[in-house]
Amino acid sequence: SRRRCTPTRAATRAAPRAPAMIRASACALAPARAVDGSRDARARETRVAAATRGARSGVAIRARTAPRTRASAGDDDDDAVDVPFEPSYVPRAPGVRDGAWAKVDADAVVASIRDADATARNAGKVMDGEPFSLLGLTSSELKQFAIDRGLPAFRGKQIADHLYAGGGASARSVDDFTTLSKKVREELKAQNVQVGRATLHHVAESTDGTTKLLLRLSDNRVVETVGIPAKEYGKSRLTCCVSSQVGCPMRCTFCATGKGGFARNLAPHEIVDQVLAIEAHFGERVSNVVFMGMGEPLLNVPNVLKAHKALNEEIGIGARHITISTVGVRGSIEKLAHAQLQSVLAVSLHAPNQALRETIIPSAKVYPMEDLLRDCEQYFIATGRRVTFEYTLLGGVNDQPEHAKELGRLLYARNLASHVNLIPYNPVDESDFKRPTRATITEFKDILEGLNVPASVRVTKGLDAAAACGQLRNEFQKNAIEGDLKPATV
Image 1 (cartoon, rainbow, N blue to C red):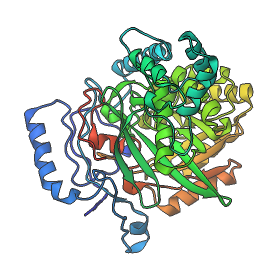
Image 2 (spheres, rainbow, N blue to C red):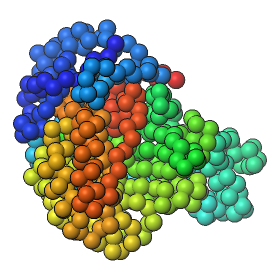
Image 3 (cartoon, rainbow, N blue to C red):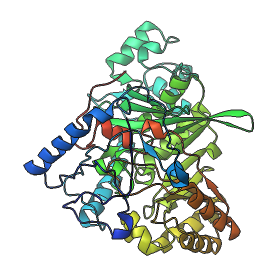
């Protein structure tokens, strides 16, 4: 059975709490958070888990989810969301707490940027005793790889053809390079050369076709990637939502990923592999890629850019069909502008003013909205590409008519040619938020368009497949840092 999220007071927590205006709701059986690791708190979680275990049959943990049901009593009930699993305890990384941005958060961001640089330096570099992953390299880089090993340059092109073959036919191991002789393949394996593919750990499929894959990496951590099939103007489209980090240090209040902490950045081959995994599952080419999965892409700029190059040049995904999302990292939008991509920059705004934004996105304290919007203007001037603003509608928090009016006036006054993508909130474990009604969503969009700010509402897909970012990962690996993993289901 499923439980419905209802407005109720959030469980008492030892950590600093967000302002009352964003403590709108929580699932009635949500366990208390053991921020101090105390024995009593853990025992309380065990009792809650035991009490709810019987209600957790058939969703999220299974490879395929059951169809959702919808209540029929009244408009408000009709607009409410059936949550297809019970809330589960998600620990924070050590020292990380709810509330205002603090030094420990800033230190985690700095560590993330340094890790990204180190990961990018090591990508494509042969190091003694370390596996060398070919995935993520371009054809020209693979030709040089072949030449460095005494092979003709065309062998590098043959390797690229195997790596990036479409329709799920891409190579998973060096043994799949059938155009190379067995002797060459054995030599490559002896040199610790590998393709760099992850292992499929779990599949969750929604009734609308949206599919989320959990991929197990070489260090036994898992990341999510989502395939979203759709038809547009009579043509099929397959969008892949990719993750850029294992966990995330940005700690946005509504996001499930940040609750498990930050472990590391993904290397280029680990990002590209997500797209190939979706292609293998659906048996067709991915047409669009959005960097909107786990992690903050602009904390991992060098590896995101290398993956972008491979996706564009080798898999053939048009640059304008690739979207890079960010909540805002000072200095990173400028780096993206220097890359002169023709891709879409999507900025997660989520509030019409600085005060409210800080309660939703704690990192806004050190990267104020005024600075963020100024950098967006410079990006538009440098690239000629309009900026899309992502705005997650949180019921009773940032979805009121006065918020829409303030947002419309703010963006219309800017030199951005901006578009607003409204995203109705997806319920998340241990959530203090609720989904807005359909009428509220429509009114918000109409107000923006009345102020000459183009807006669209993202079609909600995959709610019965734990589709909120990080939600399914938390079922299998609650803490990115510790890395404990439930057994695979595939």
